[in-house]
Image 1 (spheres, rainbow, N blue to C red):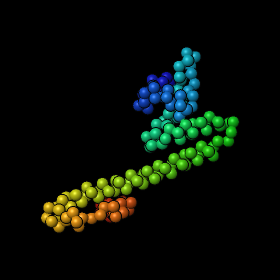
Image 2: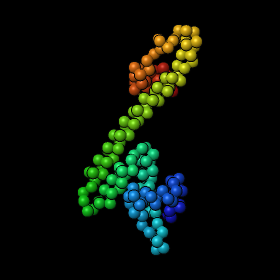
Image 3: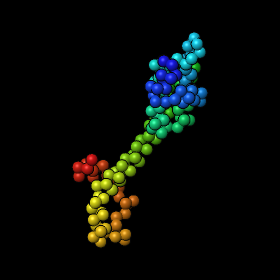
Image 4: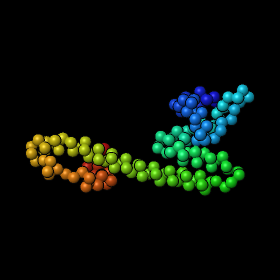
Length: 152
């Protein structure tokens, strides 16, 4: 597959693929007899992996480290180091997902209680002085509240 086709497959530009190769995010792409890049399944797998990991927020540096280690395979035992890079990135992603879940729970709570809170403010039942302290609520556990109260 040529670079234009590979780029279209992953909704990237040819320049992005060239950049990924130049900085070492993906291993060097073999060339055909005419000197054009000839993407094979293993190369496309790398592009897929990189695009998904980038979309999840992984750093360019981590991707370069991972790709560099893969190119050392056969010369050095790199499997443990490569797996550790993946584990480290998974741990970071789990933290980000937990943070995003907490924000999702906050937004769900705000949407579900919006009309009630507006009515309480308009009736004078709630004021600036007696409103709830959102930062003291545990939105990490809000998922249980949502399930218990059929909030989706």
